[in-house]
Length: 122
Image 1 (cartoon, rainbow, N blue to C red):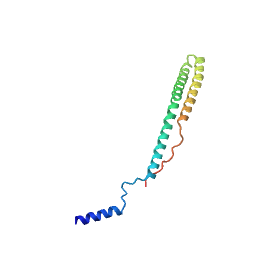
Image 2: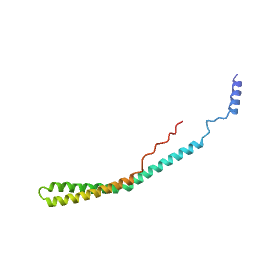
Image 3: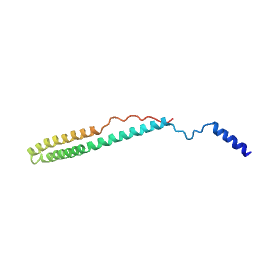
């Protein structure tokens, strides 16, 4: 009885191929390409962030100083109107310049609208 079972098992194992050890290389290649693409996109985002970091910090500093000067000018309008008026204009110009620097820094970071991801499930 055991011998018959072993003979039948051996015949079935030799006739039908065992597919448990086969690798589907087409799926593996597409997976490698997808991971490589994601790594490249992450690198681009990190590079853009690094390049725009100094410009963003400068823009924040200049805008903060400019708008602080504007506030100071507004406070001085009552006691020293000429100086207050000059500080209002100068602070406004400095603040707008800082805001422009900030916007340019944010434009460096921008990579466009997000794309809808593909669905890889079956």
